[in-house]
Image (cartoon, rainbow, N blue to C red; front, side, top):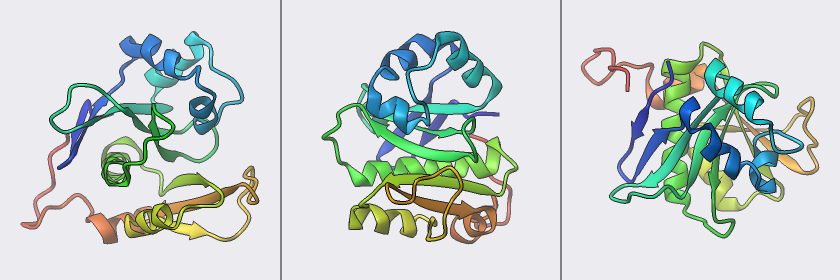
Length: 185
């Protein structure tokens, strides 16, 4: 089950439901976003609706705590190869790495605890990767994959991988400090 709301200290993620397909479709007209989503062109409405309905695509509005307006999206894409997480800001010049890191952590947690039983979650960054972005991904539990990744042009894209066992080591396996299983979002 895809969580409707994911809350952190400085960010709230609100799920984009199939009822919101037109909003998402509007943002997917932006070349930056549809390329980030693993697409070669904006999707057709019906295809996007199917992806949201079938769980191939989990997208949440990225809203800074205390604000009303989304500044981007965070999510998981599972229709173009292995599942991967992303953070996308509507403003191409936006660079709030604290919000991005927290949003990514919330999405990672949702993926491993509630969305998928798969053992790997990927993240991709255009090269050259900013040192601080790299550090935050690694700090969050992602490992840089130096080997060639099928379907990815390693000259242009850096691949990061988090495996389930790494997630458990970094974030726990769904148990809180008292050993009780955490409630779903």
